[in-house]
Every structure is written in structure tokens, then in C-alpha cells.
Length: 453
Ligand code: 5AD
Ligand code: SF4
Image (cartoon, rainbow, N blue to C red; front, side, top):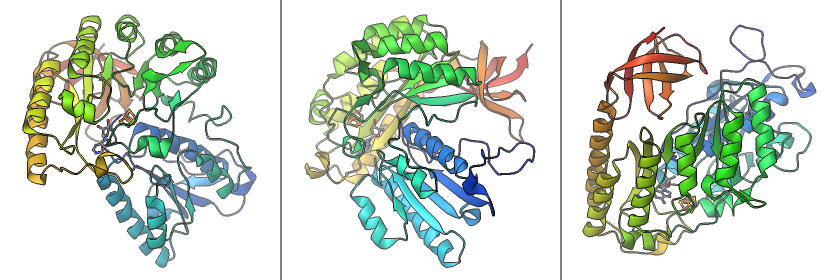
């Protein structure tokens, strides 16, 4: 799962009013009197986007109106990412801005949630900035009490679903991670793997679909490691794909990815044919130092199975450059793997030491200028592959699922069944399908013309 983005707000602006195009709260008694406002800012991965959806539900139930700027907000919730240092720097910038707004008497309360909240870093931030509430990833539910709702017992309960009724929804199937990758802070902040029971997941998906959801994304740090009562991820995916009209899952770990799951992706019409399988490095020596638990050859073999089973599919990955001890030869091996796998996209990260991880104490750092060069070399290799593969789509007619409706320029953003992002000239609504011919392609996006009747 990439956390390379500061995620834009996903939901429609919410205000307590009956103006067209805006949604009101369900009118919890706490909302009587003057309307309070809250702004949720999400940093990082889709797990955080999903946690923000849950917190959004709580603030709406408590009678807050959601606003999208700090200036308008009584309460600001920063739902944060701790995976790399630049994510923390960004949050520091926002906290500084919030301190200023508080001095001016605008923002009244600040909550820091998510992965920074679960880390030791939060104590330091609390000393430097005005923060009223710190919550980790396991006790997000405590926000309920803070905003005046009855106390909840846990975050992942069926009583607290994500935002149903929208065209797409995330469904968390597992939390935490049992791996101990050298560089990764996730196990420290999200804890060990906990899997949701199969029936519980299927019920939630059924409920979402009944309320209008057309696209379900199964979420977890290593979804393919999901297992419960003798069932494995492939069984769960099949059940969900029987119920939901469109399904995707992220993120996966190569050691858990079963061939039968890859074949199911090819066979089931409702599964988006896009696999995100982080490899991190193409060097066996580095994979060993990182404790990834597989060799480059095994990864290549998996990709071979995927390409055979899903010939029209897209493949993306995560790669870290400049992990301590990475030599020129290791880097060359990564470039070779990038060529061999012909990724359609990759999230490339410069190693960022996280306090408390093994890699932070390893020494043998790679010089910043070397990291920068390696970063650009991997990026160029990925983009060349992606561009060449996208060119093959030009002049094909594709069924496009509209994810974001058109903006002023009349272009909507959608997704093909093969998982390609497409710009398409249509005023169709999110959740609709249109058919359109691909007219051109860049390394990241396909460009389609007017929809075909
Ligand atoms: N430095 C750089 N990249 C990292 N990632 C995780 N931890 C670090 C780190 N310390 C990357 C991995 C992971 C993705 C979500 O973030 O590639 O797959
Ligand atoms: Fe982090 Fe490794 Fe777990 Fe992924 S598999 S969340 S990189 S520890």
C-alpha cells in the first residue's frame, strides 16, 4: 500500500444544511444549538483514509458539520502517517499552522490520530504543539467520547461501519502485521495481525452493496496473509467477489500470495485485474537484510503466474532505494528485476530511518547523492516500461468505471477492468460505467475520447 500521498478528502463536503449537494448529520442530540465544525486531514495510506471515514462517521453522529479548511474548523483531526520522516515533517508543518490559528482564536481543539499517535514521536509533538487528544490506531474509537458520543469498546465493530451508501467503500479485513521488515515501523504502531471473521466481512459487504456501494476494496497491511477458521484469503476474496459488483484488494506480501489467488483474479469477472505486490528490492542480499522472506526469483515466478493467469492485468509494486548497506550490485539487481517484471507502476521510496526499527541502527548508510541517482534510475526504468505497456492500450475500447466525476475541464477520472487509470470526457457520475476508446497514453494515465453509446 503506498503512503506516498497526502490524501485529499474523499467524501463530499458535509454541512448541516439542506443545500443541494451537501449531506447533513444524523442529528445526534449533541448537535442541538450552534453547529460545531470539524476538519479531518488524512495523511498516508488507504488504511488511514478508511480510519478517517470511521472518524467522520463519529463526528457527524456527534452533530459536527464537516468543513475542509482549518480556518472554519472548531475541531481539527490530523490522521497521520509515520512510515517515513517526510510524513512526520509534513504533520509538523500542519501543527505549526494550527498553533497559529489557535492563537488567533479560530481552531479550538486539535486531535492527533493514526500512526504518529501510536508512536513515541507523539510525546515530543505534544510538548511542542497544542494538542488536546492523541489516539493511536488501536483506540480511534476513543474519539467518540471526545466528541460527546457514548463510549465505544473497540474500533472495528459492526456497529461502526465505514460510510455506506457511497459508490465505493473500503472494508478492513485484517489489521496489523506479523512481519518484521527491517525498515518498517508498521508492526510497532499497528501491532500484530488480527483477522476479521469471514462471515463478518461478507455481511458488511452485503450491507454496503444493498445501500448502493458498487466498488469494494478489501484493506489490510498484508491482506493475502488473512486466514480465519481454516479459510484463507483466496476463499474470502471469492466470497466477496460473488457478492460485490467490483472488488479490489490491497496490499499484499509476496510470501503469502497464492497461485490460486492470482488465478482467481483472472477468472472472476468482478475482480479488478490489478495486483499491487511490493517487492522492495531485486537483490537477494538486500531482501535477506530486510527480512522479506523471499528471493527475487520467487517473486519473478509469482509475477509469471500472474501474467499468465491475467494477461490483461496491471502490476504495481513498492521499491525502497538506499536501504543501509545497499551496494551498486544490489541496485543493479533491482534494475534487472524492474526490467523483467515490466511493472505498470511503482511507488519508489528513498530509505527513511525510523526510530525503533532494526534498519535505523544498522549503520552503513548510502550517501544521499547516490540514493538520489538510484531513485531516478529506478523511476526512469519503471516509467519506460509503464509507458510502453500503456501504449498497447491505445485505440482499444474499454469499459471505464467512473471514480471521480468531471471537473471544470469536463474530464472524469476512471478505471478500466485491467486497473488502468483513465481520463475520460464524460459527465457520468461516480459509480457509473462508460465505454470509451483510448486515444493516447502517458506513463501513468490513459486518455479516452467521448464515451461510445
Ligand atoms: N523508508 C522508506 N520506505 C519505507 N516504506 C516503509 N518503510 C519505509 C522506510 N522506513 C515503504 C515500503 C512499503 C511502503 C508502504 O512504504 O516500500 O511497502
Ligand atoms: Fe511493514 Fe513488512 Fe509488514 Fe509490510 S510486511 S507492513 S513492510 S513489516
